[in-house]
Length: 406
Image: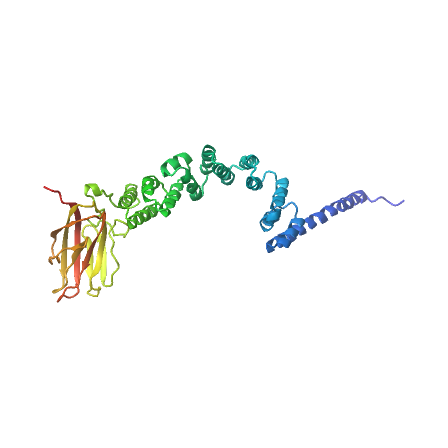
């Protein structure tokens, strides 16, 4: 009698297991091929391709999301399928709410939006519900959900602020109601107000924005200062400048036109930046400039500079209808017969400066007229019988002070 193979049962069992596993392997392979085919069809983006992609991969909601955009008449059907497939997918409930709202079924729409907001506590569902209450004129519910949306959000809130300002035009009161926790949100609001040219409101916000330790704060404050100046709103421009100075975004002193503090760097302690109320040194061929203590502003002329070149400029926030005295200390070392420098301001100009190698002090009075902003310019005007200056000019300090009546 032949001996039994001791491994025959184990071998048979393994074979049976392999036969049972084979259909699962075939099914998994088929599903993988279907998913691959679905992905390839989806990449085409056409309506027929997406329809086939949805059929090949019925558990994938993405083809139906795309079909909902391509087939508006069947969009509710696609979104309904997605909701049945993924009942916790908040965007599908948001879409249902929008469809119901368009049909005038506001109660059901609110329920759909509220359900989406319960499913997803992030920004979009909460803000969608806030928008719904805004459209329905329910201010209390709007502020509740707007605050819920904005408080934890770490992105750009410009759109949120734009809508909130329609209800609460005061930006500080609006911020107090919205309470965004993200510090950069103040910059979003400041940028929005500047684009809307609401310089007075933006200037009120400037100190709050200046306390935000976010990169770009100083640049935005100076941009607001410049924009307000260009629009003729000197008071707002000074508020921007002072906010930046108080929080050390610029290493300059605050200004106070009412008290006669008009120059932020009268001793040229810093290299001019051409930013708003700082000194500007226009680039000129043949002119080298440098500032810093102890020598002040130092200008060197090669004689190749253009005639009438403006070599330094400063914007002054003055009080209208006020008389001022400009005082400066300087030294000039020019070649003989050179044209001499002058100051020009408010349509008036000084006499050519007497040439003096050592420090010399001069003064000049002018009236601001109806202006609240004046440009003070240092230039080298062409003079008959004079050559272009060649040599050095040094400004130790410059002051502008109101002339007090006796």
